[in-house]
Each structure stands twice: as structure tokens, then as C-alpha cells.
Length: 229
Length: 169
Image 1 (spheres, chains in turn red, green):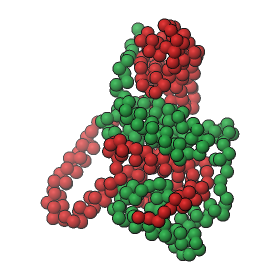
Image 2 (tube, rainbow over the protein chains, first blue to last red):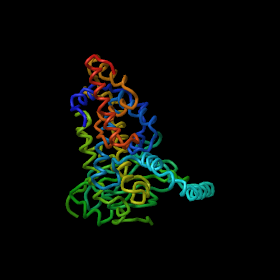
Image 3 (cartoon, rainbow over the protein chains, first blue to last red):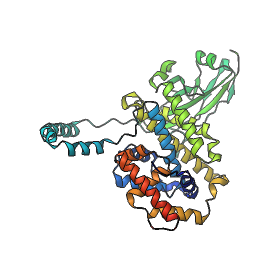
């Protein structure tokens, strides 16, 4: 369809300057753009930014790969024209049917409007920012290498925390244990977990639960368990 | 007494096959598109991103919101993680050489100036094309038919080449 443009692609990528990413749009905007969720003017602005910023150009290229991966995995991502263009095309081709469906559409919009007005406010989960907290941070206080028979995870205190939630994962991110509402600042690994992980490593993290429901999250730590019981 | 949820707690998370597939795609994408100094950390970057994805509150990114939502979240967390990684590098003044410098000003300005001179629609189509988007993907992003996108990319590339050869756009 187009002339070979590998050379242009290469030159384009090489020409982009690395700038401070302070003004870069959120990554989710890029996804929304590729998914056809944004108006043309907004997509154009995002694309234009990507033509002045190597980091965002990189984000665009990663986006193309990820969306293709999702499409291949059957995750409902496709490059079919978005709904907005299909709707406008259909409307142009079938005005009679549109007129017939108009009362039904108006009723549906009225019902939707009523629901929007009367629905209860959404319950949002408390914000969590792992390992990025500007104020207090949670540090691991237990050794990184421990005997399997007596492995204990310890962490620093978060002032005001009413309890802690501990998550233990394998290095390939399978959750093997979660302890919720731990009152102290240590957690002894259950025997089943110790046996499973003996001689290998585990990842773990802690969420400190504050009285108002907010959560202060730790970075993810590693612990290696010695072989044997 | 400490209440615990053990063993099967992971069953509420996205299924391992999906995560594994996402991990492979992310690692490959970072490897392909990031500078070598950053791509060398691809395993760590993707690992941290998937951890963040899995740490999100229950209900986000799981089946009720659709499989594509999980990919969307995975993409956003990996880009955030890359940005965070670079900020940390800058703070510690260990920015690798291949990111500190930019190409020669003549080559840079010529190509980017020519792109900037293209008509709006052609410029947007061509830029997405140069970012690696296929025609169908350009069409999907911009609400065009695939034929429209193909035409605009084709004409835009022709304008761009003409500009680079000293002609008019």
C-alpha cells in the first residue's frame, strides 16, 4: 500500500529528542487514542506530541505491539474502525430505519438519564501507591536470607496504622498467601509456604491500613529461604 | 488471632495464562523499542509492572471489565514504570549515554520540520505510520475507514519525501 518507509521510520526515530517527561500525557490517553475513544483533535494532539518526544514515541511503538499482542490473545482488541464511524456510516445509509428507531432511542436515553441521576454514588477503593509514598514508607526489617524452618517477615512501623495486610508471591507472581488484618509488624510464613519455597526465593509486600481506610503500600521485597525444613 | 487467606487467594487474580502472555508481549516490546540501557532492565521493569497490575484493588482489570482492560492496565503500568525508572536514573545522574545525547541538529530538524508541514490529517496518519501503526490501526484510532487511512498515509509519505528532496508539500 505504501512505499517502503523503513528508512523514514529509522530516521524519524533517530531524530526525536529526549525531553523531560513532565508534560507527557498519561499512558492511558495513548491507549484510548488507539482504541478510537477520543475525538480526532485530541488524537492529533497526542500524535503530534509523540513526534516531538522520543519517550512518547517509544510509548506509541510499545502500544502498537501491546495492542497486537492483545488482539492475538483474543482480548477483544482489534483494529476494526471504531463504533463512532460505523454508526455515522450506518445512519447515512439507512435514514428510514433511524427514524423508526428514534422513539425507542429517546426512551432508552430517558431511562439512562434517570439512572444517572438516581444511582448511588460509586464506592471507590482506597488509593494505594506501592513504594511511591511521598511521606512514610515501609521498609523490610527481616533478613533477605532466612532458614526455611523459621522464616519470619518483619517490616517497619507506619505511624497510625491499625493493621497490615501481607501478600506473598512466587517470583513469577503467583500469590501463594495473603494475611489480612495482621496486628503486629511481623508475619511468620505458614508451613505450607515454607515447604513449597524452601531453597528458592519469594516476593512479599505489606499494605498498612490506616483508620480512615487509606492504605500505605510497601515496595516489594524479596526473601530467600534456605533448603530443608 | 490473625485472619488469613491462604493458598487459593490467587484465584481471584487474572488467570496465569493471561499474565504470562502479557509478560511475554511486554518484555518483547520493551526490548524492541527502548534504548539498550533501558531494555537491559526489561525483565525487572515488566516484573514490577505486573506486580503493580496484580496489586490493583480487586475488580480492576479482572474478567467483568473485559480481557482487553487487563491489557490496557498492563500497558499503562509498564509505561509508568519506564518513566519512573528514567526519573530515578536522572535523579542519580546515571543517565546512560545513549539517552543523554540527541542526533545531529540538521538531520533532526529536517525530517521533523517536514512532518510538521504536512496537512493535519496526513501528518497524523504519517506519524502513526512511522510509529509502527498499520493502516487498520491508524483507521481505528482516527475513526476513518481503512481505505481513507491508506490514502492519507500514502499521500502523506509522498509529501514527506517530496519535502525532504526539496519540493513542496
